[in-house]
Length: 65
Image 1: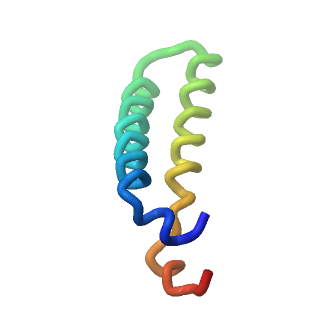
Image 2: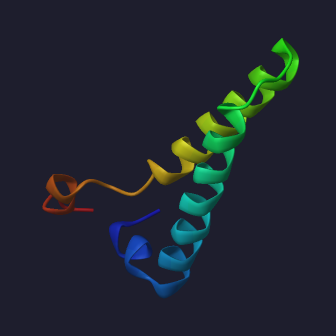
């Protein structure tokens, strides 16, 4: 993906939804679950964070594409 892709309205809506999902998963993780369910929830949290991390940081935006 290119830096400009992260400036679209679609990306902004998508990340807003991902942030809400991340909050839901964190709240779910705070509850008591068996080990397998806990690992599953944490894996989902990790994947959402990985997707959110695709967006370059402001310092990366100065770099040429």
